[in-house]
Image (cartoon, rainbow, N blue to C red; front, side, top):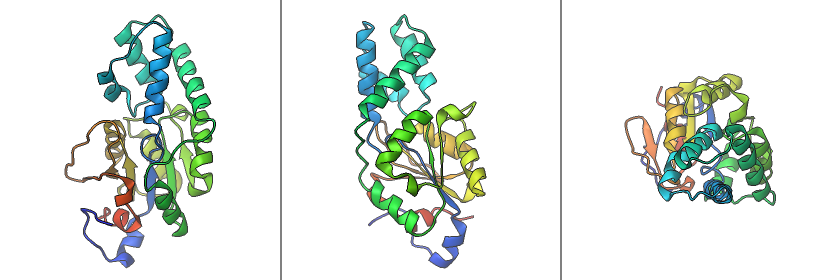
Length: 230
């Protein structure tokens, strides 16, 4: 396995990394395409065609933000609450038989669990969706989960990651976050976490304090420990 993070002494690094916080859609499970498929189908029924360029705008964000943008962009005559409920229902039906995991996701989750690393699933998706996806991911792999509809503010605000760190008793600066969108990366960095970006739909630039990789197959526990330098 290759990485841009230099090897570190595992004895000191083991105590430095206090928790791993992971996004869900597009990071652990290959569902970003499912969301776009549902959104496209629903708006087609409303008589509107979604532009491919809008996909990068709505990816990774809370449902209310994505739905609001699409209503405004298309001029569709539907209330935000009605559209949000409809999209969640359609998506829930689509994933009823399980969802595909991203390459490297199952191995990474198993490794974190085997080493007793506190791990949280932090998603902008609603609780109903998270609970369904957990059947594919394995709920035993997570110490806790945070859903987008359980907070007053979700991504790109730092609140979900601050809450997860607090519930795990971890310092955000000693938490490694894995995200696939700029919305999620923005939230994690605002919380003070160290971020690994695995871009799914749109590119994410590598900047100081942020590591960008091609897939989760490049990420393991040693890699995540190497991110924590405080």
